[in-house]
Image 1 (cartoon, rainbow, N blue to C red):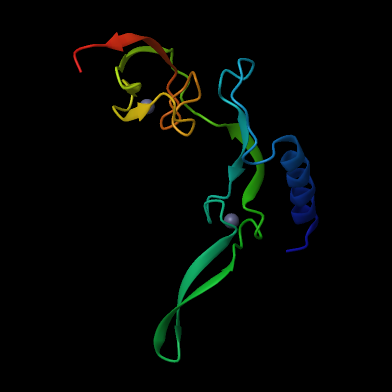
Image 2: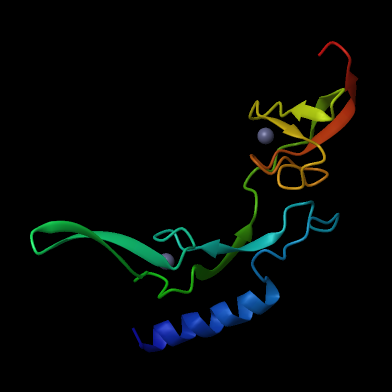
Length: 138
Ligand SMILES: [Zn+2]
Ligand SMILES: [Zn+2]
């Protein structure tokens, strides 16, 4: 794992990690609440390690080892937009308790939950929404 290709990938990844530090993305008007993020390794899902079942002394055992695809780096030396969803903004009414039901994925979430709502997009599905007012029937 020390080929020229491998070194090139590492250098590129280091550069991208400085440009787009994982977990430090911001939802801004400029990026349309769709920031550029590093692509997590598909093999280990960004964990850097994989769990392998193996037989040891006739018994089933689990071994955790460094992911062979990313070499424990967790990310690929590639970037993408956080959300693939680029549809037009959809109107949504909020319930009196400050929750909404996303019209795209039908999931309910609280507008004050920063893990669910960027202020413009539903994080679960990436759909852009604009809150049109309260729904007093619910
Ligand atoms: Zn990996
Ligand atoms: Zn949604």
